[in-house]
Length: 156
Image (cartoon, rainbow, N blue to C red; front, side, top):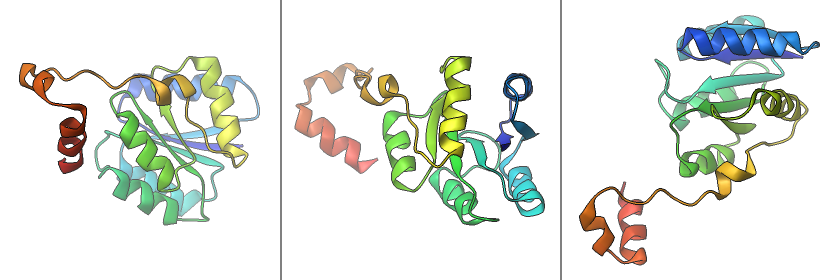
């Protein structure tokens, strides 16, 4: 199985490479920007899975996800993030992402998620997707009704 990891944090990227390759049967390539990921996809396709950090240099949100999905040999692309919200994860899955992987996921679960997505399945951890929404930090937001919060969220 061939996996491309695109993340701008060297420590995380190198750790993921070492851990995945240590599991056997997984060959990895790692880059630090979206542009480098695009170049690798064009040069080395097909990958069984491409993991894109949602907040790395060159990423333009879900537009970059869609662009990566359209490149090369139609490889599967998933988002990995330590900051993205559940709504972003849901939107990514709707856009055709192979999955959404929070950086808080345990290492053993990550290996299983990578294998699962590479086999053609869609992955998102249940606990992340069903966690309650964060409470608003602004004290004025506490005075809004649930419907008003929903409308406000729709404006952003």
